[in-house]
Image (cartoon, rainbow, N blue to C red; front, side):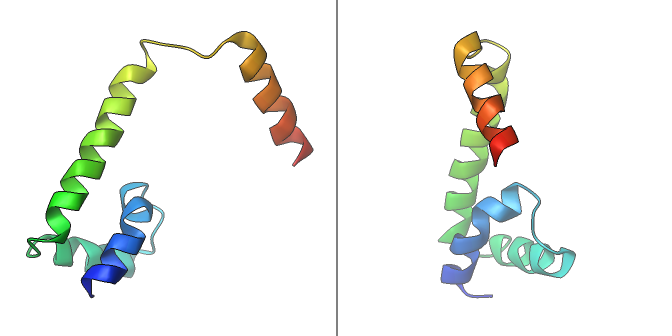
Length: 74
């Protein structure tokens, strides 16, 4: 797998949305690529930070309701 392919699929990889074979190909590439691995580390750290902050703040109730209504209408 080439760097451009890995970088295009990185968020899907981190969200575990890739098929098993494709996820394995991305993981193998990240294991040896000095260009893509730092991008993976950066994005993984960002997601970890978001996960830690999730419990510390909440959206205003009006925003939550607005989003739920829009999701039901979709």
